[in-house]
Image 1 (tube, helix red, strand yellow):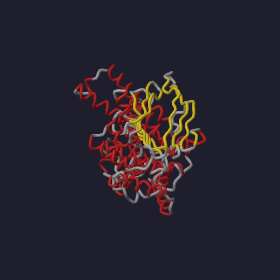
Image 2 (image 1 turned 90 degrees about the vertical axis):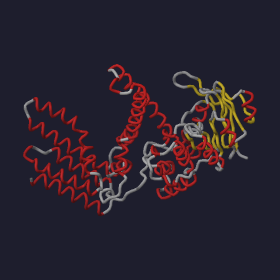
Image 3 (image 1 turned 120 degrees about the horizontal axis):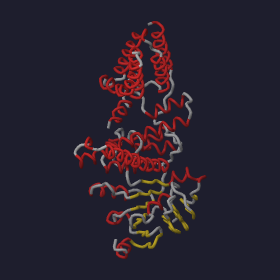
Image 4 (image 1 turned 45 degrees about the horizontal axis):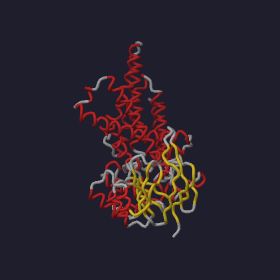
Length: 227
Length: 234
């Protein structure tokens, strides 16, 4: 199977001098799922922000055969869907359907097609009845689903979910797990929740001080790092 | 949240909502110019403008009293300037400042209550407003909501511990304002990252593409003739 993500020797230093990533190598096969584990500040979120060019460090990042460079950013952002930890940051349009349609519209898709895609995406996440509600009137679980619908409405092949279970109650976490398990996309989960990760994958990576120190089955990582 | 009310109104269905945003902007600009040139001798015109605005609010199926009270938000500012005129010994000028300020606020509130923000931006774009100005408007609008949200969160946190925000002393209030802006800045950064990651390239696409129809031409023409005609006649 082909690789959807190929990262070689990726390093990144923030403006304040904090070196967040130090020579990270990583790859992921198409339609595969991996969990990124590690302590707060170990570089997980910084790493995933490189996957669609929000941050650009030294080294190489290739998505679906396309290098992440200024020239390719538009295409890269169509292929990589980032679901942020706090859905309130992600849902910025006045109604749910407008927010979900934002990605297709921004990529130049005609309005009628964008609207149709948005409706289909809302159907997939079970929010068809909330299309014309304001995002800030949704529950935490619904907001997360709306944020995921915003990605499903695009042509994304890779879903990157940053702490997807934060703010969710246990039934909401289970529902989200079932939803994600049914999606054919390649997925990268940034999470502290190994129980949730286990629903979706057995493949895990452990970050420590800006580097990947282990990649092995989830149970082995949990045991080795007492996670 | 208060901004959500205007947002909700702007997504209503009425003959006014259906007009092209550019048509409503043009009519509003004509009205604002006429209001700005009102004098003590043309007060009846101001009264008729008020009646026209109220009739428009009714036609737009907006809650008239809420709209009228919403426009009064401008009064504290208008009254400050009116006070200066009053102290300078010109009570009529002070009165006119308040009347012009209130009518202008009502006209603008009516425009934004009948036109969704993305449509308003699309209307300004249609009228060839500078792209940079439109971009600033979009961010100002989005981040104003962020600022209100953060202020609400801090207010609740403060109430839950202090019992009343009135107990805040001047130094604490100043520190809280500083924290509010830092928090808002951090959240705005996060929102911008989310927007960029979803393909934002400097322009929020309009959800609905409206056509400037014959009915819009009629609307602008009638509004312009009525507003300027009244200004000239009364």
